[in-house]
Amino acid sequence: MKSILTGIIFLVVFGLFAQKPTMDIQGVEVVKTSHVLNLAGKPLNYTAYTGYMHMKADTGKVLAKIFFTYYQKDGEDAAKRPVTFTFNGGPGSASLWLHMGGVGPKRVLLKDDGTATAPPYTYVDNEYGWLDKTDLVFIDPVSTGYSRAVGQDASKYHGYVEDIESIGAFVRNFLSRYERWASPKFLAGESYGTTRAAGLAKHLQDRHRIYINGVILISAVLNFGTNDYAIGNDLPRALYVPSYTAAAWYHKKLSPALQARPLADILKESEAWAIGEYVSALIKGGWMSAAEKDAIAGKLAYYTGLSKDLCLQSNLRVDENRFYKSLRRADGLSVGRLDARFTGRDLDDAGEYVDFDPSFANIDGPFTSTINAYLQKELKFKEEKGYNVFGDVYPWSYKNVQNKYLNVAESLRDAMAKNPALKVYLGCGYYDFATPYFTALYDIEHMFLRPEQRSRVDIKMYESGHMYYIHKPSLIQFKKDMDGFFDSSK
Image 1 (cartoon, rainbow, N blue to C red):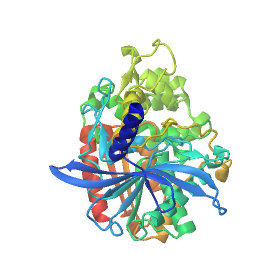
Image 2 (image 1 turned 30 degrees about the vertical axis):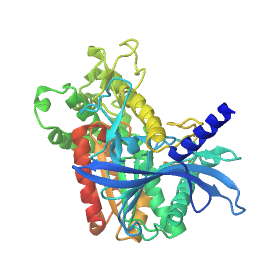
Image 3 (image 1 turned 180 degrees about the vertical axis):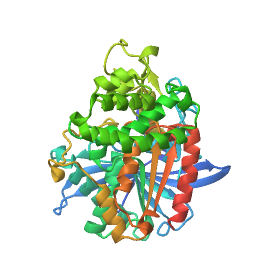
């Protein structure tokens, strides 16, 4: 009897103090918690909603569960306050990078240059987050995070069109569930998330008549024809050169004449050469004379810090994987893909390609650990299934552009043409090789925007990599830039 009474008392006490899930209007469990953020020395009170959006067929059958976290600032009219739908890329990546990096109310604690601390890792209040300017919704597409297909093949969601449709349906359902139809609306994506955001801006207008106030492109890939190098597609080789220049400058591998100049200055020169003399030489191919080829190899070496012999041996087309290995081969180091500031050690120094990306290894552990701890400890969300930082979404379907390169820059142009109020922010890291900055600039300039349209595109550059917000000086500048963007989009 004593043990039974003890158990009853435990259950009663536990029930009184445990965080209980609340039921939203569709009967789906969502955990609601209250928080205070210290922002610029002042408290900011907000409410977090963590859980699933059920995607249903017309019959009411649940087809998928999309996991999301929604932050709403307290004390303001939610119907009038901006709301930003945020996601990462991959495809196949969950939203933890933006969530715990530069946008959400908490951020992973890193050293100021972005280097990870020793494990175990922790997180702190993000005084550079966006919650003072906009409410935030972090979305994990199907097969990422905790999101899952229900009773069907998840591959039905693994493709450009399928992904746009499912996230578009999520946005529409969210606006109804949380009464945000009257709010100014923004889309924020990183990497392939920029592909999603650009396509989604058009899809939401055309399919759901939802017009967006702003699209935020963080490390963008809009036209895969400018980003994906393949034999016969030489354009990316030219557009990558300025990133090679930036990385070589950072690692002090350029000639003394270039090394002594400011980065922005030498990049302008590198850009002009890349889309002028160099791209013309690539077009010539075998029509070049030996003397011409030798001269171009010399210039390519000059702007990349590589040897002239390597440039000649590569037919003047240096693959980025060779660059990672070759730039600091003499030092026994490789450089990072996501962020060329980082270096790693491979099994040997003679290989052609690197063993791993040291810039990803730097953030993988800290972000994975902290998102799991944060969801459980702070947001009180418990889930037995693992949080998929990277879901198995391959093969990713591009059947909508079969035998072509996906180009969502045209989708973004179309959305801007139909919605004259739509503004675009484009942020790029100089040391990013996942989505090199000059490819993004090229894509914007080949949207052929009219002057009044082009004035609605705000481009910002950062001396960091793909996740430029892990570099504290860039994070601080990012916050200032985003404050200005939100203020100008009212």
